[in-house]
Image (cartoon, helix red, strand yellow):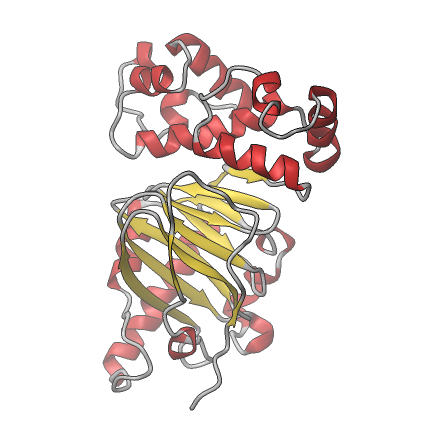
Length: 301
């Protein structure tokens, strides 16, 4: 029996979501391990909404991208809500879990670091910017390349020389597209304090449930002053600033359903103009550009 290369961790005890999650293990990661001959590997699985791939880690880098649905990738310190128009990068060795916000086909790409045999073509992964999770704008070319990569495991027959050469070409293009991709500020910090964890998970699940921090704090058993202090000490920002990041992430998920910007704003308890102003203030882009809806009329942006 080959020894699995991934480390499977127990499900997080502090995550309490209103909807019931079903947990599934990683899909035989040792059968997709990237090696010098095949430094980029791909696998695919179709998963239903509210399914979580249990927390795990592996010694190689990873990119996750879905077709047709929103996913949420969570680490110990942050969570990332990722629609099909984006991809999320995970550096080697970082424990993470992937939750299906919507039913989707999940593609996972594994990348062999240069130090482990990936060669000079993988040296870009050693740069500091790639040593942390980041959400990337996924171009149409990147999405097409991902779906063209072989998702056969090592349990099957080896690739033919022609198929192996094709995979090398596709892999090189994938890496080039990743390096060129625009970084999107969609990461949401998560605290260590259990009281704040409970509050943050509630906001992540339904950011419009309460209008003020005072109302949210009632569910934690802590005073308003204590909760406000915890946000600053644990997350380095105010509750309002943190909640805006949650709102932006939810807006991206709603936009993935082809929802007009005016409807997205209303869903998140904003007027269209207030929503547009918040987006521009937060990310320095128009709402249409941030949500990938460039073809909408200017007055909806």
